[in-house]
Length: 458
Image 1 (tube, rainbow, N blue to C red):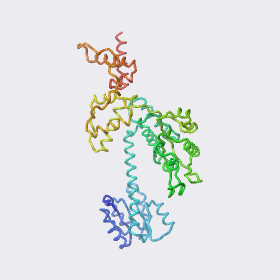
Image 2 (cartoon, rainbow, N blue to C red):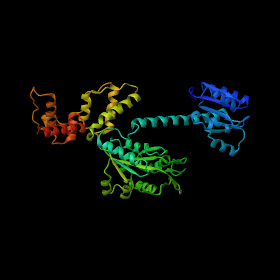
Image 3 (cartoon, rainbow, N blue to C red):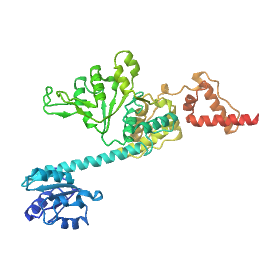
Image 4 (cartoon, rainbow, N blue to C red):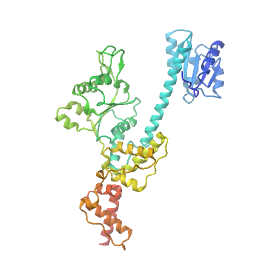
């Protein structure tokens, strides 16, 4: 058994022999183990030290363990508590658990039984802390207020839709190329929904068709070869929360019919069972396929498509929103440097301009991997961006040679260059802004300024 010295334990029992036994046994594993003979004595000890775990007899002189309100009801001083009793009464056990006990053990017990109860408590505590950290990281990823990261208008529109529909139970279908952040958008919907259950992602294309039903709905003992015990499905784990069905277009037609029934009845039937189990699940599905086309081709059920397509959220490819790259790079750099334990890489203006000019065929996922690679190397990799994925230079696109008088002011050079690039791209402002390494908003502002100056001069 592994030692966990960071955990502190307080034993409360009026029997000296039991206190001595547990103190001696648990001191081998925990650095701080103390004992008390009553609730009053225990409270005096707790005034000078916080304990992660309390092991308390129910029958005590004065107040009983179940009446230990300071330990059971004060959230700011909350500790896990294991109750012990020599009276094997069901009502006592129920009362103890209702009072807030983490576990319940009957006297006399073997040391292994007590250690197993302690391990269960510590595992729950670890999972609770891990959940807290994950929520805090999610808040950091979503910048506390925003659901999605970026400055582009399209991402701001997506963010506004997410925040508006998140508290509703309606199904959401997220479309977009691979790597555009569909799961991040789904997590944002869950994060802002107020639902207390878990966010459960499942990749429909990564699970073998013959076990997908069991994975989603669960199964009974003996339902099929190898089903040695009953098992809950992912719908059950997501009850009260959100089930994210990624790559929904990969789901077999037979399973689509069963999924549709589960969504309509808000209940699942485990494999091998005749009984349906009610579930409260918010469904978010995602695909990089054109489901409307899949329906026409007979590869996706029309009724399921309309059941999922209550609201469609379309995530644009990264090449169409280069103005978001700086914010994404900053977010990934901060998060990954902390995870890797390495300092972030400073990106120069020229580096950022190259990133904004690159087409990013792998979208946000490729950008994240690129930032991680930079942090690992401590610099930008050599030949980071293939020429084939950059905007064509002027000489290749048939543009005239750029030349200007040495007498021109810097503002004149800038205006000439920007207008020339815009002309090369046939007036496409987004494409021109990408090549220039500036945001579309900046380009619009400059053009508007020059237009106003021209009008005032005339």
